[in-house]
Image (cartoon, rainbow, N blue to C red; front, side, top):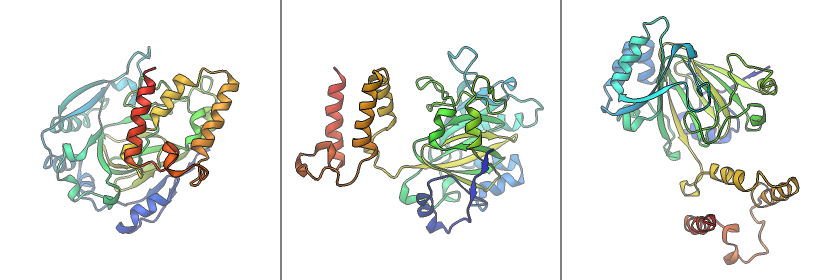
Length: 334
């Protein structure tokens, strides 16, 4: 059986970021953003929400997804796994908002969804009154808005706090080690950049995905209402369902490591090409090397090597990383 996400008393603004950095598992912060004007507008009506958002509209084109009603809101692959069951197009933000209001009046509307759109680009000025005290982390703020939708379980590398501003969100979360029980799909063909679970959470096929039962036994669940926030640590799998005719959330992404370090996923992709097909005894040997150099690394591990001679085994500042990235790129040519 799944268990509820731990609920915390909302910290004072100055204590929010230290609290988030101290948690290593998801946390619900009920009512954290209930004072935001956008939440108050949504409490009034869907029309009031749209009117509030339009005052910030920068007349930008946004990416939106259309999904037939028959798909029950599940953004997924098509039947042949050659593409997806939704279509994408670009349209003015205000036009999409108007279309969303129209669909809210329909009994069986097709799904309409705007995902991960930069708030500063789309709605400049919005964050002045609808923000969190996270400036030290220099977060990226994005918005998600649409009608009923089901976003397959996936992970994100940045830490993330999602703030529900309209509608409701049902979220199911899994620790990173549950990856083996979630039946993850292709890495190269994904709906929105991240690999996703192939399991339909609304109707799990336990014959095809028997270990998913173990994932559910270790899952965390929560239903979020307008004003609530949910902290999702880096790499935690999460399935998100928007359950109302109009749903909106704003989230803030950040990493506590310098951007020049680069994308950790690239290490995984390259390992799949160079290590995954090796004989078992060779993979075991490489596992020992990765454990030694990466996963069991200790601060003074290479004390026996002169500091100036440690290269990538030493302190990794921006200049050193850029130097060895160039060295690596040269080696990848062969």
